[in-house]
Amino acid sequence: MNVAYQIRYIKNLLKRYGIRGLFYKTLERSKSPMLEYTKCYARYLPSEEELASQRMQTFSYMPLVSIVVPTYETPKQYLKELLDSVESQSYVNWELCLADGSKTAAVEQTVAEYAAKDIRIRYQRLKKNGGISENTNSGFAMAKGEYIALMDHDDLLAANALYEMVKCLNTSYSKEERMWAMIYSDEDKINGNGSVHSRPHFKPDFNLEFLRHNNYFCHFLLFSSKLLQETKGLNKAMDGAQDYDFVLRCIDAGAIVKHVPKILYHWRIHEGSTAGNSEDKAYAFDNGCRAIEAHLKRSGEEGHAKVTENLGVYRVSYRLKGRYDITVFGEDEKQLLSIRRYYQNLSFEKKEYSFHICYKKVNSLLDGIEKDRMGDYILYIQKGIKIKAEGLLETLVGNCQHMRTAAVGVKILTRKKRVASCGYTYDENGCLIPFNSGIPAQYKGYFLHAAIPKNVSAISFGCVMFRRDALETVGGLDPALTGIYQEADCCFRLSEHGYQIVVIPEVTAVQYGKEKTEEKKEPLQLFFERWKQKFLVPDPCYNSNLSLKVNHTYAMKKM
Image 1 (tube, one colour):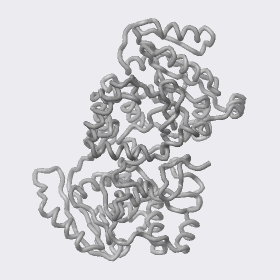
Image 2 (cartoon, rainbow, N blue to C red):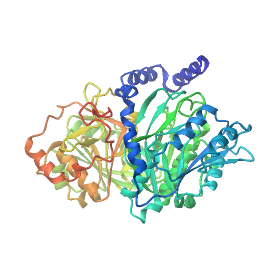
Image 3 (spheres, helix red, strand yellow):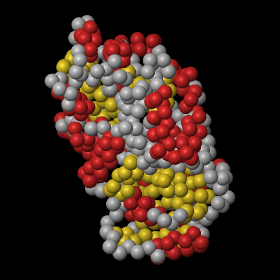
Image 4 (tube, rainbow, N blue to C red):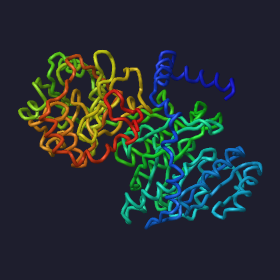
């Protein structure tokens, strides 16, 4: 990349983050455990032996997959590498549909060389360049496949990309579900000449709350022609965020989403790419906000989205309306008083919503929910936890009011201002591992997992809000368990009943009391026996390629 581009890029970063924010961003990236990926990326790609075996395999269901690529003055070398990556696919029932909006014939000439030898490569020269959405829709019109796969004109597919997608269709969907299938994968980035692989994105399985704040699906995306028909393709009015808007509309149309936790796509970083330069596309992020708000309205969960300093990541404020009856249980009298004073002094006149708040001093959450009348929402704060009252109830109630959500937690920090937990994952032995533990409070985590709200399997009850009806449905907490096992057990039972658990990292609480020590063996044994079938399957809110060690989450798993 040239010097002028680099200078402009740094200036834009300073404008967005400020000196302090850029310092921590740079420091966090310099210490990322993912830096070692560049040296070992090959282990995440299939071997020649694996590819040979895949080419010989026959699935019971082998649909035609149409790979749609809108092109525009694509550099010849990038285009040739894309074509080579498609032709090298170990799954052979595909067609490549190139919709070209270029002014010159350069793309057409390059494609003609390949199409003369492979009839699966189809090309259409568009009468005009209609922009990314219209050009892509022209590619959709060319497609004959039962499934469509999207990729950019300067990126590459891993040789097993289509094989893994079709394998997922065969193993993870029923025959009836396939018509609503949407599948995404993990990905990495490559430099301009494709010699360096970096920044692997190991994603969670379908995570609605995470998706509502950023389009983490990104690439590689495969979806059914039925979904395309239902949504009528991309919306030109959403250019710049057209893919995000399309994904959200597919979700609302009934898409059944699956995730292949393998690196199947290589996103090229160069000056003209979105991966390398997104600073000058303010309209794209404004359209991202519009896409989110339209999705929320369709879902009956209206809210307002706004752009954050992390471009492509949004802050969502869910709309509050009506009266909310809240019981605040606290083990610390001073913490209860600080919240009471704040909300007593806050005027709710002329607002669409109001809070009726009852404050209760308790010795534990179990003590509170068994002995006291509760409101529709329960906020519980443990002893030694300190949290600012400003905006607390609005944020937690906003997320907890949705019928699908049972509990909302916050990011817990230690006294030394490091992350103690941002939700929990688990291993096959039933051990609970806190997300992002050990990183400085100023860090935002791997792909901002310490900053973006998301669904998790379990949360800390240090500061948590529940829907009372959800808690009653599962019978509350189990007194036979203690500590984090009691908390996770409750979360797991809520999930079994179809509820979601959400963590909101933008709300932080500090643990000033004694930090939790290792739990006794008896509760762990009971917890493991109760949930051992669950532990046989990797946590859908995490990624099986990532480490399951305390203070080492979002690092590559050792092989």
